[in-house]
Length: 312
Image (cartoon, rainbow, N blue to C red):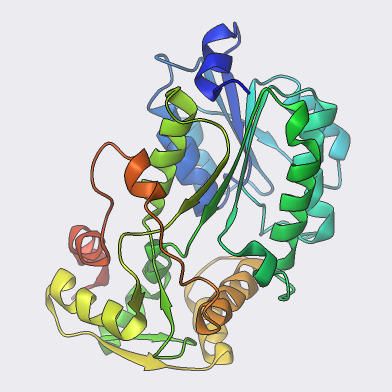
């Protein structure tokens, strides 16, 4: 199998497409790739289900954009035919998120895409017992069926992202507590979206990173009580942890944020998975793929402290 950098160097079009760019994960990957536009890539295309402010930011930064939906699978194939590499970020916010989402993976074979990256979650097989997380494993199964037809193919699984705490910044600022439906004993190894995006970008740009399976986690395995302790030091004010039920969290997210029902349910099930010890794995893959050290919970929150403090 070739490296992704071999594909880019041999191509005249030098075009890469990222799906799910109307969600934060896809946005962060596309934004990182845009830093390399003109050096490695001629075009970075941001695929989306519903155009929003994230898509507008990518447009302003120089991305081409395109609507992609499983309602029009032939359009997905047509767009894939125009690019060298496709990075599939699961489109959780699409109204038909479910088994039909495998279309984003299978289209790569029909379009004769040279390189394919599928983003997923650690322990996806175990997560498949949950309705909103099950499509991730279905997409992985589709990836396994078609990866041999690609010149380069990688499966990149991630742990929970620290950035999810940003959705609860008003609560943290006003109550000085992280309130989530996660048991106090459960642990995970959270990573920063920026680190995951940079690692994926490095994999695409440098031949020393061979195609294959990468499992990205943060450098620490922590409970949410420990995360609250790290937050206290990073933000500069005392932060506690309180376990709540999923319904309370759902209501908070509905009141505070313009995110889809699907994304809210996905987040709820992700926290349930953490409570069941399904995302407790820690690896060194992320550290090996970065130019420097990955964010710790403390260093991430210290950098973004102003977002979590009360504002007059």
